Picture 1 (cartoon, rainbow, N blue to C red):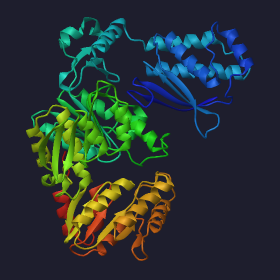
Picture 2 (cartoon, rainbow, N blue to C red):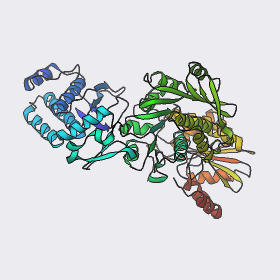
Picture 3 (cartoon, rainbow, N blue to C red):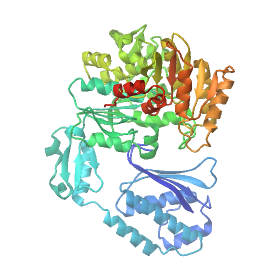
Length: 595
């Protein structure tokens, strides 16, 4: 009987809307033997016996938390497919140390029973209760928490801090723990709930660009915007944290800042699965798309599984849920939305059947009519702007960014932003290496157009190659890779779509992530050959700098080279520096990153 892994999902998650402890248990016996039941009955007056050993662990963890004064309502246990004797336990909790101690105590007692020993429950329970008392909240804090919850006021706690934060962003109020008995939500917030507007964005592709489009437009109205993106946390135009900041802690950082009037939060799969969401509610939630990426990881095996992960964000929508009418998984998510939540569709296809039905029923949507973005409210249709005039769409060549602009505009309309501010925001946003790094950034290298992009799955590469084809007057060269932790079939599929989209392919390796060196490139090349790559136009250069130089050497002025799965512009700069130092310095100077 062993605890294999443990994580705390601190916000809404795949299992529940409340914080949950998620544990993987290796249990020698799937069933609770009769002798174990008998011995358990001898040491506990009312033993929580389940249908299986895993179920008994679940019930004991629930009972121990109740004993500690932390009653919780939700728990579940399930056998892990293909992992004999392994079970996943999920249990709601109020206090992490208490929940972990409850699990440790339950496992220790059951292990003692399995070994034929007396588990000495009195000693174990006494130790458990002592720990629970050390972490117990005062009556005043407990009452303040209950009052805030009843009013819908979010309460944020900072580890090791004596302060409690009620409310979010610029609407927050802070109370010392030892003054909780004198704090009254009515006097702190009047009739309000201390919340600031929140737009949450998720999907497989397009999240960062859509987030930045929304944040840029809102900032143009004078509001102080806090954003989480894969590039960092940006508060009021300043990068305050760098790196992939699309998880729980980053959202909390934005919501904890008193300098934020409006939060725009990109939410990625990894953060949702590892810690849950950092917020319980959004005014507007956006699901852009659901396509193949990260499958086979963290228990997400199918597109349906991935859709359930994205649905965690959708479920936070308090007012409006913005969905892609052309994506069947998005449509299915919409059908499971709560009754009071409005569905707002966007679509590149004005004749999309789901969109047409939605508008006929009086719903709202944004769609593309030829090259015009049209805002519709039932039978009323209003031209919003010319999509081809938006810099992010590259005169219409970047069709995926037209979709992102439609999604962003939909979210802004749903949030109540004026149409004039929406159009101004979309029209003034430039997706370059400064404002939106690694998202279809275009750089001139000695007359060769280099497109620099984060693309790392088949859908993204298909869209990227299609856009780059519109830019090329000569040949199209792809310098491509993908993370090594993707499934074999996904890597082959990426190779196949790249073979179909580019005239020449140069495959390199970015991050092996557990694979042997050369294995990722081999699978990409295998897919490319199966996809029809002709002899002489497929090349493997594992080192990224060599791959970039090789790709550029094949190009002439007028050609386009796409650098995919890019992690940093410095890769391109360092690759060309030995042969083109002046151009490398120019690119570095022109692309110094700002928020």
